[in-house]
Image 1: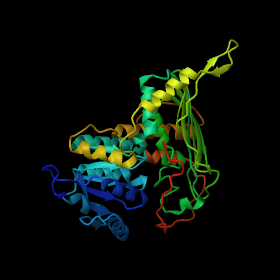
Image 2: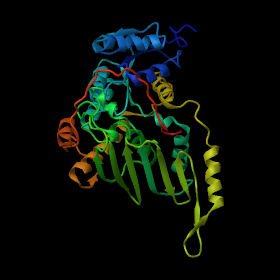
Image 3: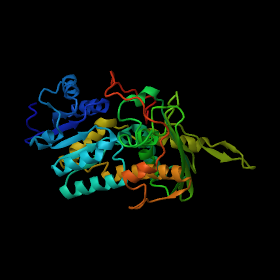
Image 4: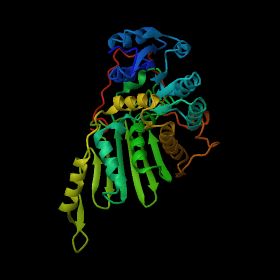
Length: 395
């Protein structure tokens, strides 16, 4: 089919801003929808990297450019995918929105709540779509557990345990922007656990209070944390979050203990009923009911980044509602800021975090955070941009 039209309409013109490892994921996803969109520009300070992304993906109609303004000035660009270090997300998104472009922005949405609010305001002012990446909502196991929780099939959730456990070598932090509060805007809580934090908020909503601690135990070229733990208080329920970059097995999980049984990702269920003395015995009927309900929920037709990008494109075209909004990305950052605030103050933090709080704006948050180590090694680029995802979120 001629990509110059889409049922009489022009394809949505896409510019990918940044050409690092995650940009490849975006490029591959957009190319799944040739009838909906066309990548027309790749922008990077290192123009050879931009051209490399174009060449690898066969983007014959895309132009490599070094200057963001050049990409934003192009009349055939309707939307941008921001694949830059987190410290550049807000400025780039606001500039793009003000230029009349829709925006898909990688996680975390922005380094601070103030910047998240400014991005949301720019989207509303310009009548454009702003969608932070939260691709793990589009994984079949996550969607099935979300459905069971929402419909109440397992009863009230009593306790949740979330393990965002990863492993990264010390040289992971040798790239120039990682491991700095200014550019990466946090360690494992911000850069990795944001995935599980978004899923937790999607499934259970925002907690009322947070008590947390962070540390750096194994990465001497990072100012930021590589382990953290938090207790989250909900009405009538507790949850705990563990975040790490030192777990060799990368065993990630979301486990929900409900009145009628266990729900979890990766999927596993169990159910107990009491003996006359209160000790447990298996409730085979309840376990079977939960297993059957899980299996009855249809698998998603498309998962991960491609699924979110399909929704983003269809929302731009007015064909469906946007699934993940700026407010969703902001909520994840608000919980992250509460974790950081509690870890620094050594006190429980009550949500929400108000404007004027030290942990509302970027500069005051950065000034309050510890520097676990001085960053002494820095390279502009790695020789390989391969991403391995370990257990992944939602397998």
